[in-house]
Every structure is written in C-alpha cells, then in structure tokens.
Image (cartoon, rainbow, N blue to C red; front, side):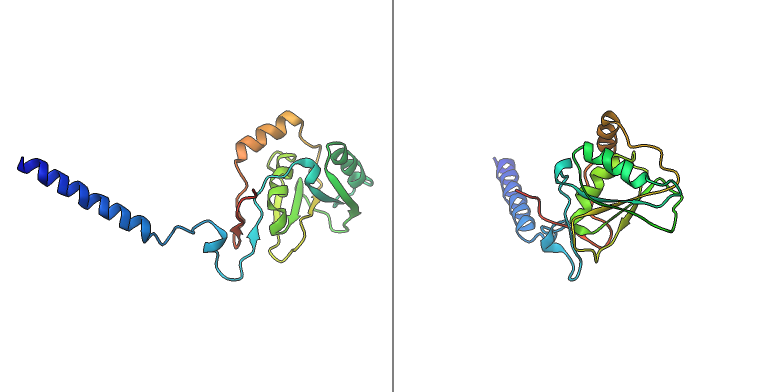
Length: 171
C-alpha cells in the first residue's frame, strides 16, 4: 500500500513539472514572426502555384534572344512573366534567382526548374514579390515536369533565408 502512495505522489509531482515547463516555455514563439528579432524581414514561405508566380527573365549570356525564348517557355508553363531584359555583365553559372522576402516561396518553386542548381540571390531590402531569373552561360534548358516534381521533393519545403524570419502560414 505504501508503494502505491509513493508512486502516485511521484506521478502527481511529475505532472506538475510538465505543466510548469509547458506554461513557462520561453521558446514557444521560436520559428514564428512573434519570435523574430527587430528589423528582420518576414519571409513568405508559402509555395505558390505557377499562375501566381511573377517573374522577370534576364539574359546574362552572349546568346541573343535567350531571355525571350525562356520567358515564352515559362509563360507557356503558366508563370506570370512581367518583362524580359538583357544584362551586360555575363554570369557563368546556370542561373541566378534574385528575390526578396515576399518571393521566397516563388523562388523555391523556380529553383526546381533549374534542378536546384540556380544560385540564390536573396535581397532582404527588396519589397516586391517578383523573382528575377537571370540566365547564365551554363544554362541549357528548363527541367521537365517530372524533373521539377522530383526536385521539389528532394529540396523539401521552403526555408527562411539567413537574416529573415518565417512569416505565419497563410490560411
């Protein structure tokens, strides 16, 4: 009988410790906007549908008309192509994705179209939700639908870039 009383008392004490730990948890806001340091932008991590992704396509290669060709292909895949441009300074990579906090989820989707080989060009000061797709000299073609789906599965969900906080999920 004495053992049952002691075990019961220990159970009540353990329950009290658990409740106290939950109530006083100082990390309950970690990973949300409420726990974000002052001045850090909120990164929109919502993975957009293609029809909701706004992009600019920039040609940073020596191939004339590449931006227009890729823009047409992305438009045919239901992306909202805002404009095309040419950049005088060439880049040697496959592509650079330039975006701000509002474009994180969109850039994550676009990254899959480059098989996760595009360079990230996150700019915390940028205020729009447009992603600039800057094509480099090593660009050959966009990924197929199957390759895009596989790349999205391999990369996992979008993550907040360094120096930003995840915004609360959309409802």
